[in-house]
Structure formats: C-alpha cells, structure tokens
Image (cartoon, rainbow, N blue to C red):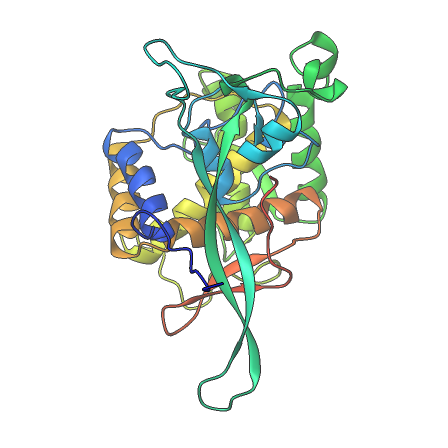
Amino acid sequence: MAKTTRKSTGPKIDMYQDVTDRILAQLEAGTAPWRKPWNTNVGRPQNLEGRAYRGINVLLTGLAGYASPFWMTYRQMQERGGHLKQLPGFTGKETGQKGTRVVLWQMLRIADKETGKPKTIPMLKHFTVFNLEQTEGVKLPKRVAEWNTPEAIEHQTIESAEDVIATYLAGGPEFREYGDRAYYSPEADSITVPPITAYANVDEYYATVFHEIGHSTGHEARLDRFTGKGRAFGCADYGREELVAEMTSAFLQAETGVETAEQNSAAYLASWIRSIKEDPKAVVVAAGAAQKAADLVLGRSATAEVVETSGGDVEVVESPERVAA
C-alpha cells in the first residue's frame, strides 16, 4: 500500500500574533480585557474537572464573553455525550458555534544543529475549546451542575481579598493608606494607596491594591523583575511592567471574587498598545510573569515562567505550563 501523508488544511497560525491582535482590538476600543475576563461568582475559567486555566488563557477565554467558567475540547464534549447547540439560522451539521483558541507550551526534543546533541525547546501551540453554554447534553460532574447555586458561591466574599492581602503583607512590603495617589516604591519597598473611603466602591479599592501588590512582587527580594528596567512613564519597559501589574491584579481578583468595571485612562491604554505593538510576544510573556507574581502572593509554587531571552526568543523556565483542557 502506498504511504500517504496527511497535509494540514488552512493557513498556519502565528499564535503570538493571534493573541496580540485579540488583545489590541480590545485596547483600541478603549477597554483593558484583563479588567474582568471571568465570572467572579466562581473564579477563574476551568475545565470540567476543576483545573483552572492559567496565564494568557484566562484572558483568551474571558474575551469570548460567556458567563459559565467551564470549558472543554470538542472530544471531551463528545466523550460526555454532548453536542454543540445549534444557533438560529443554522441547519443540519452546521451549528454556527465558534470555538475559542487557547495555548499551551509543548516541550520538543530535537538535535542541536551544531553539536548534534539532543536538546529541549519550548513551542507555543494552540487548540480549540468550547464553553459549557455552547453545548447541550453534556454529562456534568455534580460540582459543575450546581456551580450557580448559593452553596457554590457562598465562599466568594471580599473577606477573601482581605485574607490574601494580609497574608502577603505579613512578610512583604510596607503598606499604608494615605493621600490621593496609588503607587509602589521599589526603593522603600512600600505600597501607598488612598484610603478605602476615597473609592467609588470597595471593589475598585481591592483592584488598586492588587495592582500595586503586583508591582511589589518585582522587588529584588522577591521575583527581581526590575533589574536594568526603566520605569519612566510611557517608555517600553514601563508599559511592560504595567501589563504585568494589571494582569496580576486581574488574576488576584478572579481568585477572591472582586468585581470591577473600571475603565483605564487613555494614557495607560496608549502605553500598553505601544508596548504590545512593539513586541508581539509581550502579552504572552507578561501573562506568564503575572501568573508567577500571583502564585507568589497566594503562596503557591509556580509551575512555569515564560521569559524573553537576550536574543528576543522566549523560553519556559521550570516545568512547562499545561492548559487545563
């Protein structure tokens, strides 16, 4: 029998550019997509077994706009006896449903071109998932079937945000409520925010505190993110660090049930847009750094860090992150 080769159909996807384009579209529309890309009643997006999505996948699934936090691949849906809902105007096998692309790092073993010795390199790959709201007939675990009951959301309170802040500050930077400006000082290793009474609502207060906490994780005594980095407003490094702090805040909000609909100023949006356009890898790298920062604040062991090398490439440090599909 003649050997056949299956050819790929459709154009090859540059996942860095794909992620960048989706984020830029939101920023240029005047909205920071990491502000609330989740359902705070149940926390971060996750698979049916309860494993939470991490890093950039929190934002990518959030952009899809579904209330349910539960996601699955097409095969997982079929294995549980389900199918895609048919949208109005579609008949037969056409459902009209569109999946959401998420990413994962896959480690590949290849031979070094110069030495011939095997080496491991990271490759950013993608696959498609569907939200629970897009499906019908899926046999659900009990914890998923009851996700929107009062019992399932009882623990999502602002007290959870207070607990996270208190635990982190116990061994972290100095913290004070004072004045009318929020900022982190690396030199003094101190966080300053206006008093909680100065905010329109408590959620904005917590979002602000989490943002400054995100900056504080970069101190040399913690993740040492500031070495050789400029912090002047509007410069590229400033924009990248602001991305990390904002995403860290977003991840911590998702963990603690904080709601915020705050719109960012035009100056911040412009800074982020400029940084992202200059480097298509910026969003993915920033999300990896933010996930590591959030893990530090929450007292968790980091599973992976996406870093940019001096040559402009990216590599995964520690064990590679696997998406929760």
